[in-house]
Amino acid sequence: RLIVAKVRRGPESRIELATQEGGEVSDGYQLSSAVTEALVLVGVALGPPKDVEVCFCHAHSGARARLTLPDTSTIGEVRAAALARFPQWDGNRLRLGIRGANQEKFQQLEDSELLSGREQLLVLGVDI
Image (cartoon, rainbow, N blue to C red):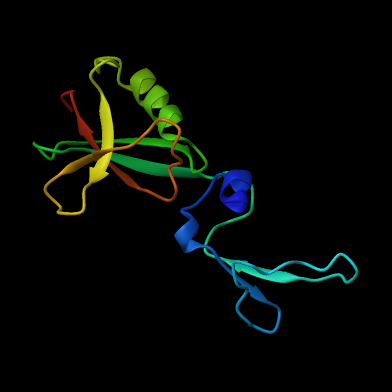
């Protein structure tokens, strides 16, 4: 979780840590303060934020709109940028989410959640 919070990228499930020799690093692994250790991390970028294009797809009509923003954005920041770019959208009605587990259900995302590599968000409450 700390890695996700520091780099503002995720999700946690994408991150894999290993020793330089390729050995798995378990959840309980503790770094030694007496020895310099190096670990290998794969799954998320550690560099500076980069711009990504996010596609907003209306959950019912399928209409689409696109917006470019940093890959480290939170859903709240995505919402603010979308409302600035599309002033006809009503911020009180705009819902951003993803498909739920059964593919028919809309799962709304919290504003505090990170974009986490998502390139498409479902939209409800406004017309695209």
